[in-house]
Length: 460
Figure 1 (tube, rainbow, N blue to C red):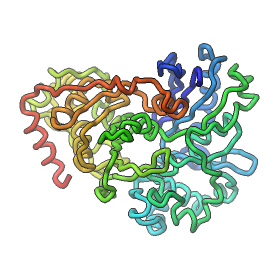
Figure 2: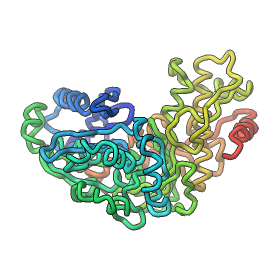
Figure 3: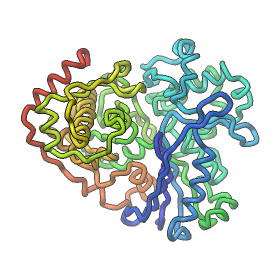
Figure 4: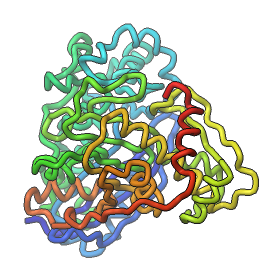
């Protein structure tokens, strides 16, 4: 049984370090920093140096750090680090770098069919294969010196303990690198011999080894502290709820953050539509999970457009619906069921900041509602992440889908929840049973508002 667990969560927007008491899942301390993109060697790259410096300082400042028995790395998808034979970083591409557009047409001819990888063709470098193809064909000065490719969670595991590994939940996240049904590398990877550059597969919860001595000395953590292999962030959230699925629940999980990721149990993969940014994720056990997504957190912020992040109330929502104020998709370039559209607002004159927050909330709920319909209804929907804290999000979803039981997860951090399951398994706390059910809202005209909004999307 572990005592204290440090969860190191590298998201697209923020990086967070949380100290968790394993016995009951309580967060004892949590700190975060905003991420930035750096320009190096003509590429937009992840700020590995800045993140590592912050991590070392944050670990040093954790209370009771002498009781930390394991660190679990968690990170976003479509991210890898290329290393040379000496372990020096050659590239850590940012998936939103427009440079990947230079090779997009050639890559489209090279990639495997959607029916094999269940990876839709996504903008820029959101398919990890597109990043590797660009580097191999356009930057041989970088790719030609590459000896190792590490997915982002496993890069941090290696930095902490010195052991290299690969893991399926990151390999199978809209990467073009994995066959979810076949359980192995895609034909693209085999044709281009990229498989030679990936280290052996390990399970997400495997303990790869103790901290490097210099890191234990620098941070004050015990030399016996182990480092887990690590996990893709959305799959961490899914893992927390997966035991309910195995117990027979028909479940959809809405994991929110920069991306809103909707993952469904028992889904027929034939329902997935490439043009709607629907895909098969791969869970930590290698099983495909029907998934759809959009940049909910970023679109919410874009609609707010610098206004204060006020907390919306039902009164604010009623005002938005009554005056017909609307936000129509899409407010982020990257993916989603309405990719390619240009977002716009209408009827917003005179809205207060709280009413703008209600407008942004009803927008992300309406997009999520479309995604739920595309995936097929479940009996139960659970919301976690930042949208679980929004007082309108889950109740609005319940209002639009009254036959579905909607819950707010007791664990609002998917990274924390997944880390607990990875380290404690069946011995994890009973917090999952404390999910809070929500009731529908009384908002006159909401059904008509939804119809008008959908009509504005034309071919949704």
